[in-house]
Length: 130
Image (cartoon, rainbow, N blue to C red; front, side):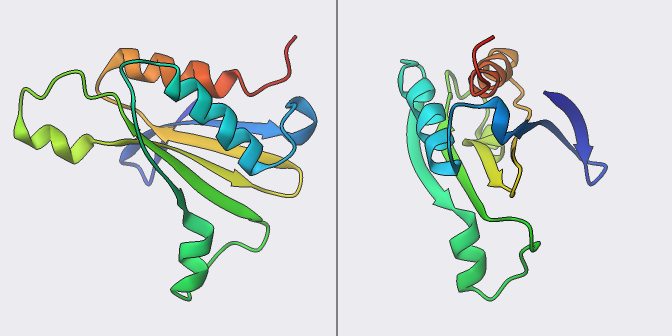
């Protein structure tokens, strides 16, 4: 995983995972593995899977030619709600883009360090066992 500042504003974590380095054959298999990790955590509420690729095609948007598929797993940790403006930071999402030779998995850092640790662990678990 590496840290990036997307658009000089948004702190994100990114893993570029070569297809040869994961037992998962395609984006949907990766997504199911992430979903299983999230569902196993009693503090996580699953919300939805969003097919970003299908949506972008439907609205006639632009998609980089080498992106074969793109989906987001949407969920929420939400252990407390001390301020109504926290809703701007929730829910959380992990995005997966499938390219011909690799998957690009990314998420925006959460203000809760434990959430970042869990999301990083879920993503790292997508690699082949060593």
